[in-house]
Image (cartoon, rainbow, N blue to C red; front, side, top):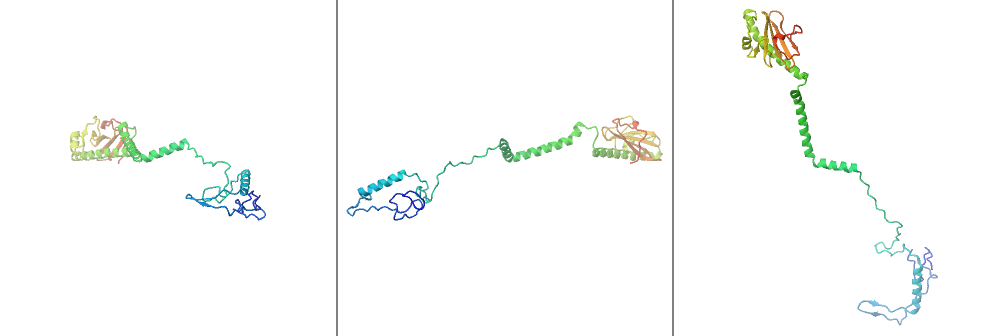
Length: 271
C-alpha cells in the first residue's frame, strides 16, 4: 500500500506514514491483529517477556518484513539517525566533503618573513652596528684631508689659515713700527730685534724659508719692510709696510717657498 500524501509504500499494519506523518485512511488499513485472551504474560526477574504471536499474525508480519526488504532504501526516513535531530530528514552526500587546500607560500615570502623575524630579534645589535658605522664614516670624512692632503683646501679652512697668517704679520708690522719711529728708517732692523718687539714671534732672515708661525723679513729700502709667513703648505702670505706713504699692504700667492726675498712685484692690496 502507498501513503496518499507522499506516495511512499508503507506496510499494511502502519496507522500513519512514518515518512511524512500523514494518517492512513481506514480503507487502506488492514485488520488489526488481536491478541487472544488466553495469551498470558509472565514477568521474570530480568523484565517482561511476551509469548510468540499466533500463527495468523506471523503470516502478516512475514509479509510486512518481505515488503520492507523489497522496498528501496530511504535515507530520508525519520529516526534513522541517532543524533538529537533524528526526526528530521537527512540527505546522503553524493560526494565527500572537500576540505580547503592550503595556499602554497612562495619562497620569496618565506624569505622576507624570516628576514623580518631576524631583524626584529636582532634589533638592538643592528642599531649598534648602524651607529658605529655612521661614527666611523664621519671620522673618515674628517680625517681624509689630514691624512691624504687634498690639493685645494676647503673655503672655510683656507679663510681661517689666511686670517691667522695675516694676524701674525700685523703683529710683526707693529713691532717694526716701534723700531722705525726713532730714526724713520728700517735700516738698522734685525730679525732678533724685530722678534723681541713683536711679542716674541720667531723672525728669520729674508732668504730663510719661514715655517708655520714664523716670519721671514727683508728691509727692501729704508722706508719699506717686507715680511712673509705661510698660510698652509701650498700658500704664502706677504706683507709690505711703508709707514710714510701707502701703509701696510698684503698679497697671497700659491707657493711652498715662503721667503721674504720671493715677494711678488704686483697684486698688493690693503686688508
